[in-house]
Image (cartoon, rainbow, N blue to C red):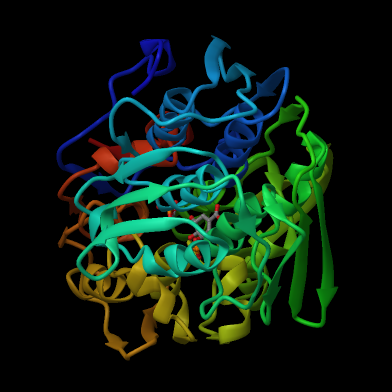
Length: 450
Ligand SMILES: O=C(O)C1=C[C@@H](OP(=O)(O)O)[C@@H](O)[C@H](O)C1
Ligand SMILES: C=C(OP(=O)(O)O)C(=O)O
């Protein structure tokens, strides 16, 4: 899947790991590059005329799977240095020779189905056992309205065979779930539709496709509407190459910062974190919990504001996390659940049905992670209640089942750093899908993970 194996300098860690209380957790690390923006930069560059340069690309398994697929669709995608990639786009994508295997990546497969839809091609999309259990119909339904034909496995799952069309219809569509992946798939298909495609979101999700595509010449706009967002794309505009410098990922930064909050011996700082409000919900919740957190502006990249974020250990209090905040922190609930275990009092999180459609059923799995480590939780249909035990009193000692889910693996290890007894996670392989530098960053901060 990866053209030049250089991208993976260390073989990815796999198998079980145990995290225990560490005599030092403090220090400064640069943020890992953003996964969402990395996927989109490769895809847009891969269909633009000319040579695009991407700096600071996240070289994680998910993004490398996207790079491999875009290459198989006709673009020339090359790694030229550490995090530096050069993409010579193919303005017309072609049928790939084999399956497009997107591994563990929902973003990769769903956005690529949309991006491929506007070309005269047939492609079969596959993924790993986790991705093959996730719903694809949410993307296939609007794409069929636009004119593609699809064949999916039972229940609208992978493998999916998609026949694209150069004569797509523009649609106006309100996705039934708040999902940037669904929105983005429609917008990417809309680049080739006749007329204006409109996606109406009653609750805004991350708008990275809308901000990046115009850099490549797309006629794409967005307009806020209260808590919602209306995105529009006019089809038929030729895309040109662009250069993108990827900002730091607030979802990955959450793990070292959480370690600082629940197990820090001094300040932990992550520099260059994107503060886009559609991605920053966790940090707002941490402020509500009374966390000692400072957020210092640190310039911008690819039009996104950055900050250096420093946390210090201290008392946290349980809070009510309302549903409206979910789209801005949808990937952060496993780590928030862990942080909540170290707070005083109850944290009640609601409006979380979408968590059941991630790499694992993250709602049930986050509850199980805490229960296995002596933390009292209540699991609802779309809610989770965590009975915080305060700093220093979380028992730990459990085994965390990670279920092919990187965020559960990282959340389990952070729990172990602050708990009384060590915590073992059953397999850390998936951490490389989103945060390949996790173990280096945690070790540099002093974390005892072995
Ligand atoms: O568009 C994106 O880059 C993403 C959107 C979210 O998924 P949904 O659109 O399914 O909520 C998120 O969970 C995922 O990690 C990345
Ligand atoms: C849900 C996630 O990713 P994806 O949907 O791209 O697999 C995630 O990174 O937490």
